[in-house]
Amino acid sequence: MPIVIGRIEASLCRIAHFDYWGETVRRSVLLDSKVDLLLFSHAERAIVEVTHRETNPHNARVLVQAHGDRYVGLNPPPIPLSTEEMGWVFDRPFQRMLHSQYGEAKIPA
Image 1 (cartoon, one colour):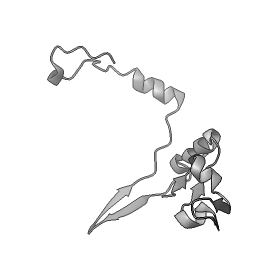
Image 2 (image 1 turned 120 degrees about the vertical axis):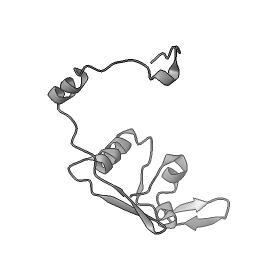
Image 3 (image 1 turned 30 degrees about the vertical axis):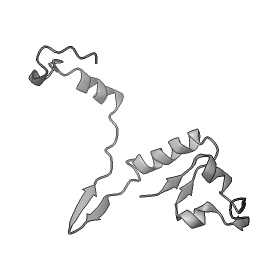
């Protein structure tokens, strides 16, 4: 799983820079933080591109993570439904009623 940093602090430290607190020249925060990617400036387009590449079902891989003596596995996301398939799903005869645990409550959703 890639580690991504950003915001103004990371943006200002993406290359060698003068550290006023320590009065030294420090190397890039990329090297010190051991991250995979630094997004600088506002990064609206960059974050969309990054998230598309981590969740793209055409190039995603299985992720397995160890938790002590057990493992958790995440499969790649499925290929999104086509417009026709999505229409079919929403045409199903859903009850569109609240679960009985809510009683007579009004939920504005």
